[in-house]
Image (cartoon, rainbow, N blue to C red; front, side, top):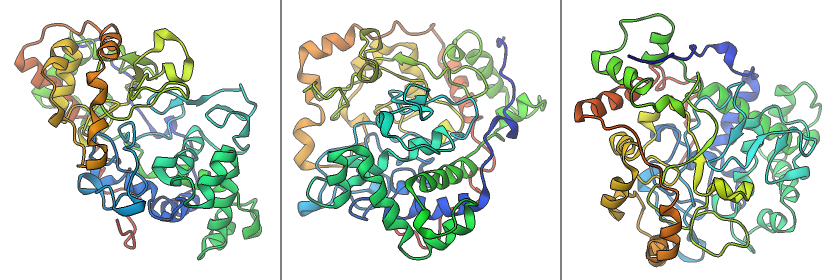
Length: 417
């Protein structure tokens, strides 16, 4: 039988956001105006057609063309120079009041360390006035070279980033408030803004946060209905999977609480590939996970526990999208060593990029690094039958909201991927 189930999520568990600001945020989310070269939007890597991700193991960022698994790496001088090092996470329930940490390595968290409410890569240069952790998060893809900012020499945004991270945000804010009808809309949506000239990156981030929070709050899945008292809503398989999840399989040890995440960091021993993300002085094409932020050896190769609402929509899985299915990801949790042994390169959904092919899997030829990573592979979970694994997958499918296809705003008709 299942252990203690979490309390159901309700509207009270989420921050309040203004709908007029969210409507403005919708436009900005799908507009390429926030990218250095005006060629990519937030939606290119976080689109509702792919569960608010991109359907890829490692994304194709600035310089790419198209959307989702069909996205190509571009051509000529503007083609991509690097894959995005980590899987694009889903955006579900990021307006939750209890959320305290974001990004796979937790490099953004609520904190008083720098006097602005957050511990972030911008440190003391993060502007004051951001209304949420989600608003702070929205600022960083805009100034990431391979995500939205572009390569050195291509535009003034990336040039400013290389001077100091916060120097780029005023450039983007001026671009927004002086183009089209954005200035007027900011004046209408924000009470403290009387003229377009007053719009800063703070209002832009707050609008983006309002949109993402309202658009992708999801608390009406069959599991949520079960927690709210409808005992008949789950199938027999889903109910059995829930009992395993909160009992014998011990999934809820990490996927804990109403958000189904302990917001902590754990090493899972996923197969290694891609450019990785490490510390500035680290030359390896590897991903050291939380250790890159904390500089603590015990955090090596550890990544934040993801929340699980709508997880069936957000394939592929893992911090680098190593596994294409929920079943494979569940099996990895149960026996990481065996799954690492049978994992194949074709399991990763990586669009062909000939000029990066030589380095996509180069880390696997480094025996010393592979030995280091092997030391952090966990023992795994209990022995489960095939039927029990299928039941857990069935339960994970019960976490899909019933209204995910009818969000409050939707994709603008003018969006052209």
